[in-house]
Length: 451
Ligand SMILES: Cc1cc2nc3c(=O)[nH]c(=O)nc-3n(C[C@H](O)[C@H](O)[C@H](O)COP(=O)(O)OP(=O)(O)OC[C@H]3O[C@@H](n4cnc5c(N)ncnc54)[C@H](O)[C@@H]3O)c2cc1C
View (spheres, rainbow, N blue to C red):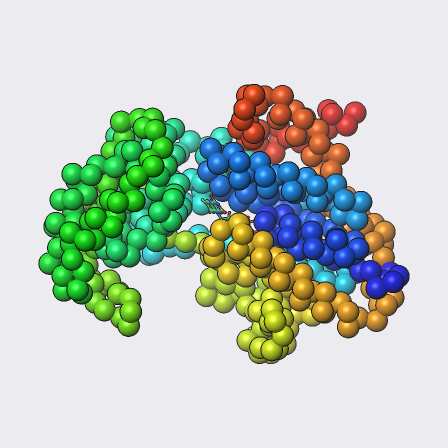
């Protein structure tokens, strides 16, 4: 194509990062083709952010609808990219677009290599989050938690999962297992408001007293640390269950203990001490072990990208160009890079959590998408007009591959049918509370709506 410098750009992944790329480049007049694994757009804005954050979710949804309704944006939901999926990375590259941006998030899970990880009652945070946000494949699977749940981690995702256990599962007890101490907690103080009405404040005081000598060894005063922790327990959301929430600090799970049915009965835990490391601290195991009884264990220790997609991958991340270009934002940070050839993968870019797994909130992912769009704009401005296909040619080629694969892509019309059906189930003041939990239900509904 490239009449008047306009190009076709493929964005893979319709989460906050991909939608920002698409928004910026479509505003510049380019033709944008979005390929998204989920039927619905939004990524973790739809299937990650806590269900009760209606304002945030609703605001994002509104922006994304406005985007995909633009005439130069072409949406294909239910299209996965990867080996053995609807299209491979190479097939996407060969569709004839001027550039391809992968903003597919971080779909892998980090493990901390604990023996017994396959026991019944062991879960990864992302699966649990997808479950309570009703992502097809997760929403209708049972996630049995028992009475006492241990969540490994001290970040916002730990808090969200505790919130779910308190609000919806109403379990007896939730314990956050934290490798370091209270001062090294990672969650945002605002987030703790969702669960602080359920805090076992006496139990927390005892826990901090238990580790006071180890805190003192790195110059931390236990009373001050406790005050810092509990002072954040203000403006708590109203209590909705009798669940008690607490913490286990300076604790590393070493082994998952199981009963005769391979069901979790507890954790073998190692006591840690803190060692100073510059301004920060590190946890060091003391080789003192104890048993911690619980019925379920949820690992909330961060995400990594999905290496099976087929993009250059190393140590949990897709590889980007190590050779800085000096531009601002630096092109190298967004360019996919093949270490075998020592070259960038021409025309292939990364944005959002696909570039930096678990990095920040929606605003950060959006900014990453905006930066990536700038980098892509610079890249396509170097391409000779006419050197790439027009949008019709790219769309026809895509359609013929999807037809041959018997794929079921969902377009804007299909999304509208789905949205109006889901809306008819929503309560008056509540957006997005009702969701279909299987792709089949959604596909059938859309099919019926189109005929
Ligand atoms: C539990 C949790 C709670 C959070 N709560 C908040 C919050 O309250 N406020 C806030 O601001 N931020 C929150 N965040 C952070 C926010 O969700 C992320 O910053 C943001 O969603 C990252 O955007 P992304 O586009 O990079 O990835 P994602 O949102 O993960 O989007 C990835 C997209 O790629 C698609 N995809 C994946 N694989 C493929 C494939 N192989 N082929 C095609 N498409 C694919 C997916 O369908 C998805 O649409 C939360 C995150 C989590 C995990």
